[in-house]
Image (cartoon, rainbow, N blue to C red; front, side, top):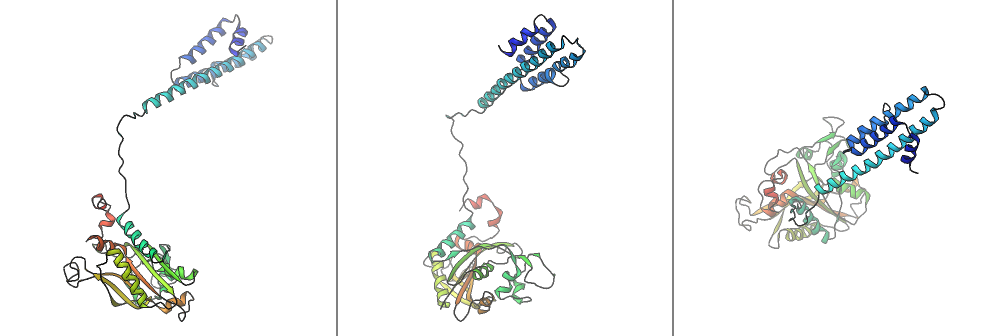
Amino acid sequence: MSDLEHLKELIGERKEMAEFLDEALSAVEQSDSLESLERVRVEMLGKKGKVSAIFRGIPSLPPSERPVLGEIANTLRRVLSDEIARKKSVLLAEEEREKLSEAALDVTLPGRRKRLGHKHLLSSVIDEIISIFLTLGYRVEEGPEIELDYYNFEALNQPAYHPARSLQDSFYVKRRDPEKNYPDDVLLRTHTSPVQIRVMESDSPPLYVVSPGKAYRRDEVDATHSAVFHQVEGFAVDRDINMGHLKGTLEVFIKKLFGEKREARFRPHFFPFTEPSAEMDISCFACSGKGCALCKGSGWLEIMGCGMIDPNVFGYVSYDPERFSGFAFGMGVERIAQLKYGIDDMRVFFENDTRFLEQF
């Protein structure tokens, strides 16, 4: 016997109780939403509901009637709870069917084509540079953009008050003294060369490494300068490395990057962490070395700095300069991209104008 049949048998001739049962079951069945069903539940089974009122009235009945009415009330509560749960599952199923019908997919309709993105030009140039050096036997290493003064300056032969520091006006994150320089000062690195020190601290020669990444300097933003820019630093340390190895490596690099027709030249220069130092130029794209507005009549375009690693730098990483020598070079990725693709304003790399980005 079901609970409902048992309840009806218990109610018997109690007309008011039978009418209440019919009214409650009808209210549950006629609920057409979860909200209306919840109102019925509260009205019938809530703390102040009608079934609770029956329980509250039991103590006032004669002792002989209390057990029967108590059983009726308990069975009534159970029946209504079951009916409400059943109705709720029906309403939930109907709601789910409505949602599915509204969201139905018409497979006969034409699809919506999504626009796909692609690598930023600077990312593509960095990848191309790295791939060339990978074929030459180099490995890739990266370092933190928030760097210690020690790695950014001191270990690169630029101690406190070195004049070269003024050429790279820095963004300091944490500084012990606004006037003096300390090795534990924290700054945004001004070049990717600190990676050279970090690698040499942990590894022993032979080393052939390139390190791409962002660098930061207090430059005014214009067509050829930016406070945030990208560099690729490279260095090699081994026995008997000389300037000829440096020149040969970079000449191979520029021909692979810019084409076999590109010529290279090296001009004496100064960098605190290389000695001797040089600037590397390549023959102008526009005039093939004859002289034009792009190369300012010289026939050459500056592309990167380079040189033999200063023995003082080896002293910071406990390398014996009598046993090992090395060379280093560094290039600005924006500069490379401008030369390779004929772009005359660096700012377009960072403005995210799709008219520019879609060309590459």
